[in-house]
Image (cartoon, rainbow, N blue to C red; front, side):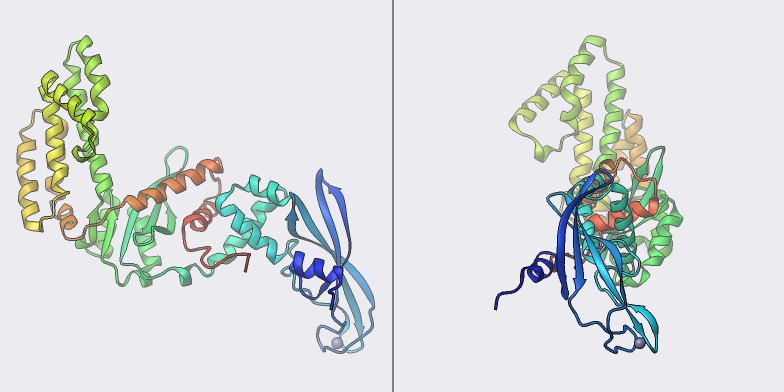
Length: 413
Ligand SMILES: [Zn+2]
């Protein structure tokens, strides 16, 4: 049997079961082209409360944003029939397209949520033929609704990492908790203090019962929070931040050395060596090795500073146990504390202070490279939206983009 066109339009094109299309027309509304589709229920009419079949009393019209085609929004012009039931009074028939009093359908909500994962609100608005403020409204309301299932979607975790991210100008920071296994953001909390970290640990305490490691940088507040809430042996400093920290020391040393040079030599040395000495030995090409040979000849002090850095970082590449590593690190500290450069002496001191935590690395090899990728995604997100004024919305956006908020949600279902 041939299915009538009205039914094909509503059921296949608009994914509306139990409705038929009366008319379709293009109209202009607030400078935007829209397609208005008049639809009505094709089911027999009955009282929504007592289910008695009754004749039609009158109709009410309701506009619902539903989808988009070629950049134009499809607005449903839904005719809702009313009945005059002798027992219950005048009642309007039920509809399943949109939630209670919302002006958009459930389908559109899923559409918006899927598009705003990768697009900014303005592009989503253009694509769906809506205004940016409508997209914002639907997006935020949808995300708040999804948040109810966040705890349920979050798995139990063994390896997590904690880091800070600047989410707004003028030093506004937030603490980000990341799952190391699938590099997804668990949650975000405003501030980068000990209290922020403790609040996150408390909130997810049920999910952290099997916890083994917490990767972090050298932040005092996170170290102290982890010590208080779990124990010191959970802390692992990640390689990325360690190299960053050591490289910063090397930069200071380089500046110290170059300060005392005559101007003409300083210029030549600076041009060649700044990035050369920061490079790890195993990442060097023949060109770099030749340059390094040259440096050894030109400036022995800088070459030595480079070797001291390599000595330290190469300890963390070795597959040794805690005790062997402790000896190596202590030896390095002894050597560096005699160094003529202030930056290395300070580094040696701080390594001595944190040596018991640093040694955890040799028991549990954890890299934070994935968490850094997450940080980049967050930064892109902020840049794309030109910053967020509303912290709650920002948090939801991060959880939507790289958290557990969107788990299992797709409007193609
Ligand atoms: Zn009734």
